[in-house]
Length: 127
Length: 346
Image (cartoon, rainbow over all chains, first blue to last red; front, side):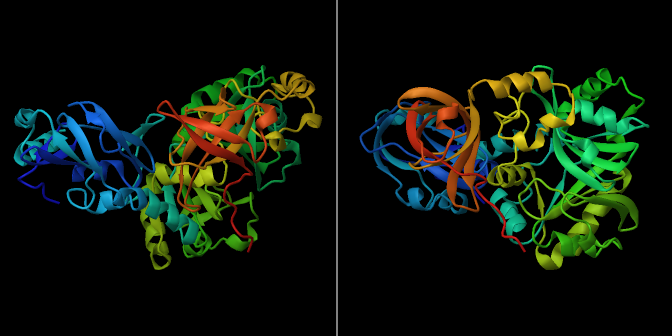
């Protein structure tokens, strides 16, 4: 699976799709593959404040729990309801239908510190 | 791949869910060569086995196996094991990978009998073929009539031309066989079994599926349900302890345990609220800490989140409301009868 060139990426394997100060966060194809069958996703409610680098939820596969970290600071606008009923969507379409939350960025310049798709692919290749 | 008792082993080959379901509905093949083997030989081999293990080895017939335990003097587990009786003067033990050195030392320490204890792990690879189509798969590769090997019996024969100990045992709650073969033949036999099982939909299975399968069947895992600080009664394994068979290592501690109150017991639960209890999580009853989860996770067969936990004796029965502390949040669960899954009798 390819990594969308318009997204930004973290070393903790989240992606961020930014449009102005609106963002959408998910976990990468690499992350879902490493986790295996995802069976449970725990996400924050709208209005919750997020801090860059802090955990905001968790993704559980059959074998393990994994925290997810916010790539940037801001406030949760929407959590992906689809994942509460169909967590497997995260395996099937991690960069699309399997998005986790939508947020309002409070410090948009934080985006500049994130990896490009090319950097991320190099990063996971070396990991 | 993960390190497991010093072995580099795959957690999954394809997907834990797919592998799990293959074993429940068709067949799965596991490489369990990490398991240890200890052979005990000599005129008093049976006496030694009976002295170091809890089950009654004297009652085994040649060709029969049983589940048993090695205990410390204080009654805690050294290991849980399978004992196979080859003949009156030869026994074959299958033990956990991570415990094999300590098991070997333990058995030798108590060997005051005319018996020889032989560390045999290097001479055996082990494959487990499990599932409703395990029999049909393995039968294609052997002249031994598998139908004549009763559950928890075994036979020495050949699989795909190589000598094999074929045991009607398993760790999945499903029907199946575990075969012991020469390590040099293991890779070839692995491929032969996959080829033979292809028509039935056999899948290679990793440690992940092995764990979800054994948890549904409430089969204990050393280091989780069983440790040096729990005894077989607490672990709900009274059925492998034969107190009336004569003296054995740990017996006097167990006698004391029987005379006292049940302080804790292994109990099954299922989550009633959103969340998954995992190994090591705290368990609360009536807003107070009461125990801990030994193994917990999703049950692919039941489509529920299940687990095993230690609870005080008073709570060790179905219908008790629990809270599992999941990342500092109490999440509802209820105790349930076990095993969680039992295969339909054929």
